[in-house]
Image 1 (tube, rainbow over the protein chains, first blue to last red):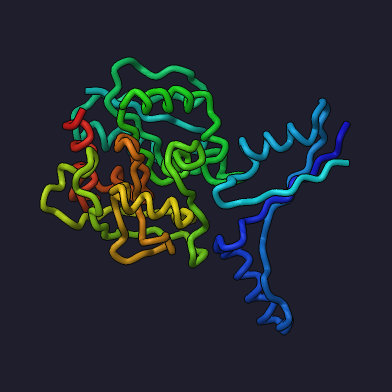
Image 2 (image 1 turned 45 degrees about the vertical axis):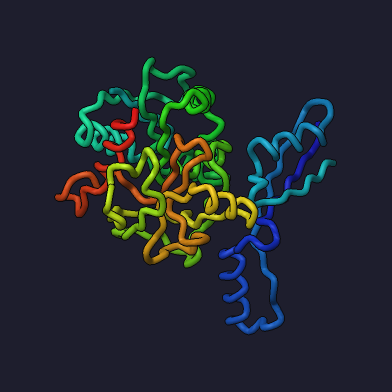
Amino acid sequence: MAKVKVHIFLKPGVLDVQGKAVEGALNGLGWTGVSEARVGKLIQFDYAGDDVEAEVKKMCDTLLANTVIESYRIEVE
Amino acid sequence: MSAAVIVFPGSNCDRDCKVAVERSTGARVDMVWHQDTTLPEGLDLIVLPGGFSYGDYLRCGAMAAQSPIMQAVKKAADDGVAVVGICNGFQILCEAGMLPGALLRNAGLKYVCKLVSLEVANPNTRFTAGYQDQTEVIMTQGNGDGNFFADAETLARLEGEGQVVFRYVDNPNGSVNSIAGIQNARGNVLGMMPHPDRAFEAELGSADGATLFRSVLDAA
């Protein structure tokens, strides 16, 4: 059984309004050194099957990520 | 003439769309469940309604785009049937790859619900022909993820090929080039964030939405 984690973020250059809001809040709380904040998603699941990396990549391209606006990174343990 | 409204779990404008199309055009409107795999024969129009399909989980429209019925919707569009996706329906069309681009969170982070003025950016489409000399229309808008985005190359193609159908007069959500609605290259699939289905009688604040549905069915 593989333990899979998929990290998904909006691509650089695509406006991340949640990231901007979080950055503004942290700056406002006094952490003025915070910049380039991005809010993404972590999806984790167990997977039973062969070709884990290739299958998870297919899952990302089919459903988990919208590659028009998002990029993803796959971790398999 | 006949139309179908696709019902996804979490759609909430499906009844509105049925009533709007019926009263605007007199067409027969069937409701089709998302798990179905076939559409009624002889359709002139398919409507993907607004709402929050699958609770907007993962991304708005992402899971609805993978519904069994969407294969039949794609095939019907390939055969030339008109498809209109409104609000969540627009998000579903983008997620299904039937329209380019994507809808991001509104630039102001707020859910925006109000009447909006739209410029008819392309009056020569099967969706807008009925507006004739009317260059500005009013419809209502209600969305949190209505900020249309496309990369520079896609945007140039949309603008160059007359695929931008509606533009906000006063951009409420940060959409690139103030885009409110686009059509596919063939001109038979329209996606738009504002709701023609909530603007089909003067009592609703505007009857401009009725003209859109009539245009589609007049062209059929």
